[in-house]
Amino acid sequence: MSDSRDIDTSRDANDPGLSVGSGGTSLGDLFFLMDRDPRTSSRPLVIFLHGALRHSENTQAWFPVLSKDFDVIFVDLPGHGHSPSDGEPTLAAFTERFREFLLRHFSRRDVVIVGESVGGLIGLGVADGRTPCVRGVIAADPPLSTAKQWPIYANFVHRATTRPIGDYLMTLFANAFGYTLEGLNGDRIYYSVLAHVTVPALILTGTLPLFPVRPQKTIPCLLDDVDKAMIRAMKNPHLALSIVPGAGHLCLDTTFPEARVAVLDFCAARLLQQPARQAG
Image (tube, rainbow, N blue to C red; front, side, top):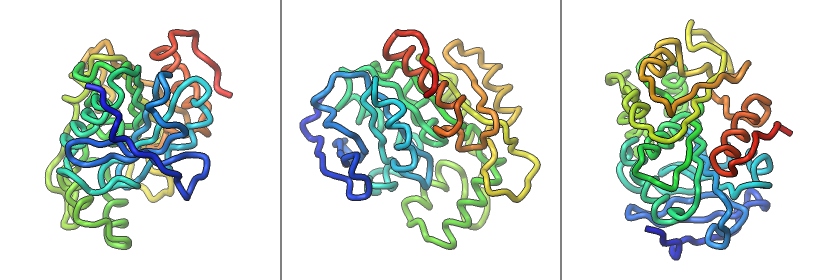
């Protein structure tokens, strides 16, 4: 199904170079940043999804990198950025909400999803063959098992106690990560999401290890040797793993040449069918 009649656009006061668009779903609108009305273009589309407690502006530095060859939009997940706190705050619900967004508005486009952290998990979730417009997914350091992710839990506690994040996002962290202010409520394991991927998917991670626990400003990578071994053991021919030297959890960063090359090459191969480009 393709229906973009309920997409609304307006200028983003914080960034005059992009506009804010909204695309309807059965559970309310999802908002996104863009440079053009997606109804007026047939170019291949790259959609960015941010991580938890972040928003679309955090990934918009990729716009000038990709906009020469692709339409690029930056979607806010429910309860983040411009998108209101609609619907159930679970990873499964977010995934199905995003799938509906794709099928309703972009079913006739060729799409690559680029997601960081939780956004990467959601991208992998819609790469299961039930969203035909999705030609590939890049998942940057997705959290595949959550109980061991000490820096994310520490950041959650710090944010929730110094700048309250609201009941909706508190519930999301409890559901998706098992995190509460009282401690951990079990592990959340997402290896099964990888097993169901049926289109090319590139998992990016960095070289700053999760352990040992230590104080530092840069969040280390969430993928450890166990996660990498699980990815290899699945033997899913659609999955590939690439390392960004010097990067931590936020390896989806235009300042890393390896990340730029990986994203440009992947999008070109999946959407343009042309030789890989070099990072500029």
